[in-house]
Length: 441
Image (cartoon, rainbow, N blue to C red):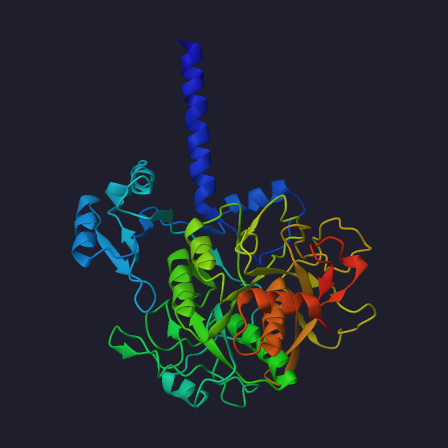
């Protein structure tokens, strides 16, 4: 009898631990940790939890509204949120607290996953974009301010930026660069899409009100590469992160589908990520556009091996993803006279090989990380001051811009990827990543 009781207690502990680790994510730009144990400890510290009463649901193609309502009634949901302007088959189900408590949500998820009338069911975790950089209190601008920066007509390549939005009034944005939505505008929540969408507040004003202006910095770096090459382009801002840098997984899915539905979009930049759990719906959506959209994703900033501890979306096994590590800064550079806003804890670096040309904080992996780009001591002008920033978020952005500079009309995702790789620079000191290459500097 005692053995049975002990076994039952052990099984219960395993189940509770699994549920806990499933619902916890970690910020891809959070402080560097030295070991897997430290990383797990950081996860348990609650960087971002899943709501205890929400599930992301995907209906099969062709499901009618009447059929969806019957399914909502069957599962006794309290509220639901549609993925407007993106995917009519994607919904967020919100259950009553009592209904979801004491394993109720887990039971609903298991039941949903086996339901032949549903194509997918996942938790709705929170993904965090950096909070370490503080630039200002981040004001707000109207969509009318963005219209001033909208291009007259879309030409060349369109790069979608899934991030905190874009600060239209940033002084570095002197020429029109925002996507023109006149030909494929969405109408939702009483508003018409103009040049992008805000999935956090469900409106047509994807302004960057993040305290670190993460999306603005990412966009500026993307544009810098294409401006240098003098190519035609436009940026599609897809605001999926709020002022504090929090991304609801459901909003990230909606944002991705929104961008993927734009036929002009050829590159999607995802400068965020999480560890361990694949999140199959995002992988499915990336797979669905494998032939026409290249997804550029940051490898992460914990100085770990993504072959051993997968970091998503960069570790998805799809042909149209480029995972980007961060190069270290040029030896001998001296930025002591300027403010340095690092997104990593430079005093807490892992023990890496000093022969590597990667930044100490950058994740790596000979099968899971493809190439590298500058990721340390990157200058960004703000309020007439040079801020030096670190992080693979910005490595990914520079890569997206570089790919955009190489794009020619009609290129498939496969062609963009092969063109990128053939134009990158080989360096044997980048042996810790797949192609041992970096973009030209």
